[in-house]
Amino acid sequence: MGAPEVAGAAGLLVTGLAAGFVAGSASCTAVQGGLLAGLAGGREPGGRRWAVGWFLLGRLAAYSAVGALLGLVGAAVMPGPATRAALLVAAGLLVAAFAVRLLRRTNTDRADSKRADSDRTDSERAVSDRAGTRCGECVPERGVVARLGLRLTSPPLLGAATVLVPCGVTLSMEMVAVTSRSAAGGAAVLAGFVVGSSPAFALLGYALRRLSRTRVSRLAGVAALAAGLWTAGTGLNLGGWLPRSTPPAAAVTGPDAAALPPTVTIWAMRDGYRPGYVRLPAGVPVEIVFRPAERGCTGTVTIAGRDVALPATVRLPPQPPGTLRYVCGMGMYTGFLNFS
Image (cartoon, rainbow, N blue to C red; front, top):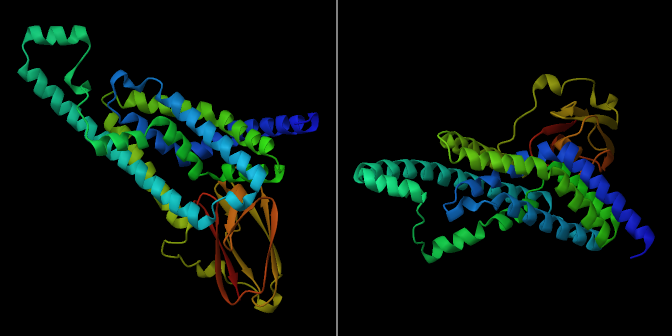
């Protein structure tokens, strides 16, 4: 690799670092942070002290590998919106399962601790306390299925799994990796993105693990359950599998169809798209100019079955009368184009 390629990869690394630290921290922890709940529900001896570190290393390795592939092969290896939506739903259900396990562990540990304390004598309690082994921390024998499940939910694999549920900023970085047209450049931009967003993940993972050992562990489990259901809901919305809402009548009234312009500008805000409901003429080609006004997951839009990184101009062929729905890359925010 020559000097120009090294300089290009270094520049992409800095780009990824900046995007991960500034925009990716909040966006990605919102979508992928729930997988950290899988680290809080374990019963392994030693408390899995380095679990968060292994999670981050798995995430770094997976993103670097995907970035190299994107740089070599291009967008062919990027999952489409429908596949990504299914992965979001699966990830949400997995996070919900982790939350339920954490809640069940909390109840079981309390019951075991009370039962053990009532059965032991004062001398046995003293010996147990000096040894640092309370009954709630004992590791039971596991069957084959349980051991397999433990390996599949190991910290490095959970970290690697985050690449399957990208946030909106991640999608933008993946498209940058595609345009780099080199394995080194693609790996550099996504590796930088992971490193830039790692402090937020480390802080969230540490907080979850600390909370799981306190009296508010049940609250942490409830929060993780809500995050899992929310992630599954965004996947359903991204895939268009939720019941479609009809735009308000006031939003689609206006001039006659003959007077409608064939071009419209839509601004991507942090909390959605403005305007969210737009009228366009049916039966003629139209242009939608998407412009980012604020950083966030709305920086990538899924429209007409494809992902588009903003700013961009989307040209649509003549459309029949009706409503075309578009959504941000994370499935959180939706807009409508009404053709008449």
